[in-house]
Amino acid sequence: MKPTIVIDTNVLAVSERLHAGASEASVAACVQLAVRMQAGDLIVALDTADEILSEYLRALNQGRSAGLAVKLARRLQQRKHDPKVCRQIAITPLPDPAGSYYEVPASVRDIDPDDQKFFAVAAAEQEKLQIFAGLDFEWWQRKKDLSAAGLDVQFLCSDQLFEIEKEAGVAPGG
Image (cartoon, one colour):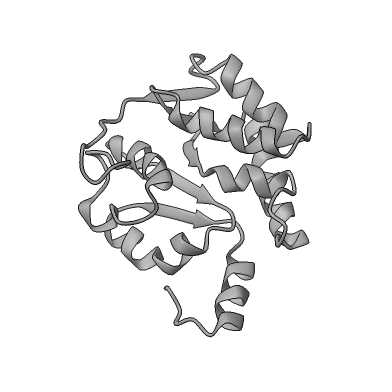
């Protein structure tokens, strides 16, 4: 059975070179995951309300490119009900804090509200799905909290995030 994963939007943005600071190694890592998704090696988890898919399309349309990630997002849009491509997962919005969901562990509900849908989709399933992130420094700084909350975040750009952290003189997040 193919693994089901959650993909943060920044993975697709980095693979399309929409993140100005992304190193070649970061772009390559994100492209490699996009290639696996396009090849059908992975099933992409999406929320049933299409919030994740809508964010993908908005972010990629801003770049006005037509690369692999754009094609992948369009494929997900066209085949979102195909269980060989996508897994639709229901998540439950909470009234407070805004942008959070019942499925998100309370300890990480203070992270950017735009990111909560990814955490909710990953946490909603009994087997807790892996989340793949590109260049998200807030997630990098909170990786211990995310792990303690039972969220398995894989940082495709960890080398570059570590360098950013070192250059900024910020205390390590993990």
